Image (cartoon, rainbow, N blue to C red; front, side, top):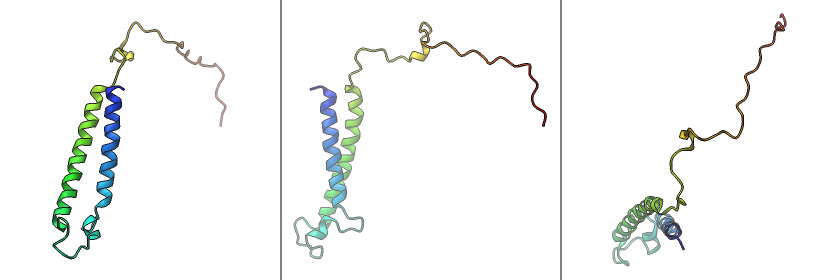
Length: 112
């Protein structure tokens, strides 16, 4: 198993967790806290702490996802090929001949 494959699996897992955490949140302030009753302050962790946890976990997962994506670029196997552009290679030959310019015809254009 290559390093890039491990990074790819981690990126998929973190992206899935990020989607789940975002979907649990409610844009109007309810979200997971409303499923615990929403009204009282003696619930499991309290409404404010649940919102803080979801907010911090969203930022943490988003930062982790960005870092994994950037680090996965280092792990890509390039196969020992040169990273230089082939367009800059002066020794390369083209596989197709260049098209010949069109010959101007001596016939006059039709009058309108």
